[in-house]
Length: 102
Image 1 (cartoon, rainbow, N blue to C red):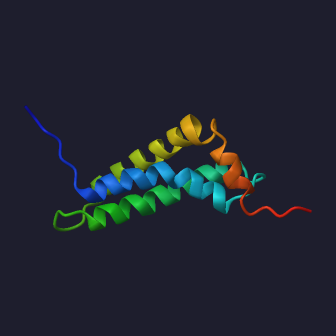
Image 2: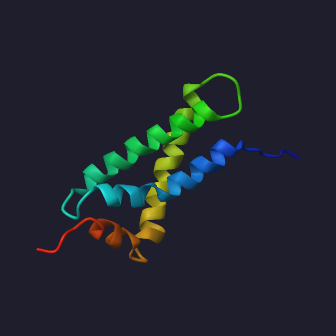
């Protein structure tokens, strides 16, 4: 039987990927285009994935796993946004967090 083990850095990376859409909502406005938000989420996913690969317990740094982690983080962040954060209203509250009343 084959067992899969992940370093703690990868688990932390998955948790961060789950929260990244809320961070994107905090730093953008409601009128920001969805394409811009997607590109920002992809960029943050890439930074997070490359940092996770850098801090992993294995010696050295490898671009292959970092690219796979970027893809996984982006897909997980997108799924978390549309599957949880948007339906329960967290995305809306994040967008309104820094809006001042006129």
